[in-house]
Image (cartoon, rainbow, N blue to C red; front, side):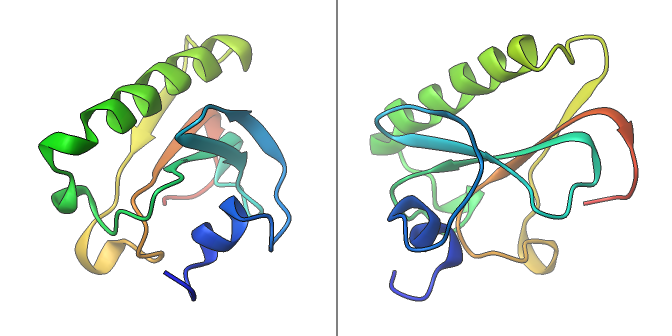
Length: 109
């Protein structure tokens, strides 16, 4: 998708502060964090919403989960974290992603 901000981040057209990366997944720090630690985890392939996940995306979803587990450990937030997936009118960027929030939450996402 040419006008998707997350696709542009994946393509390197928009800079980001990477937290971690695999062949199919990118994790980067939110530019307007809602918690002490706020990382967005996205598939590199454009999948618009959580409801658009299909059986053929199982490897991507598995990589997203494993990378998130690694981030929880490396960011040392294993005692206080949450994952947030927004959908419908709550999803502001039409590219599947979740928020990894750790430590004190400053505002809701």
